[in-house]
Image (cartoon, rainbow, N blue to C red):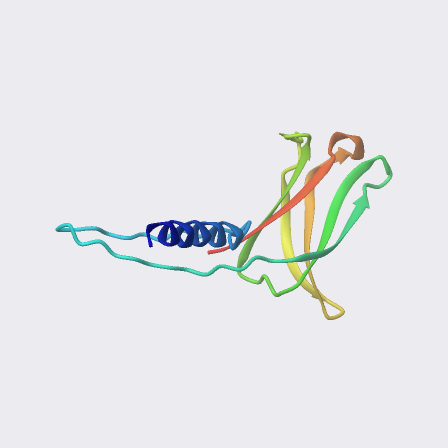
Length: 131
């Protein structure tokens, strides 16, 4: 009997770990007078289906803008792009990201505040959060 409880607890922990997402949420639970509470929140992320890199003009060796095609309307959400070289954020990669509906496609366009050499990054990330 004890082994089956331990096995079920292990399966529950493994299932919880497999169900986690890149997007997380927090839940505030107040404990007063030794009474514990429980809360749960399901979150879903934004899926990126295409990334288009737009070169700067006239210097095409630099990145000026990135257009992400996403699976939903992100109006009212905050979007931030990150460019990394290895694990280090690329200097000058701060950007302004705006949502638009373009020919039935949801897009988030991030324009760099200062153009960055294409060789200065090897990873592109988009973080979308709701308020």
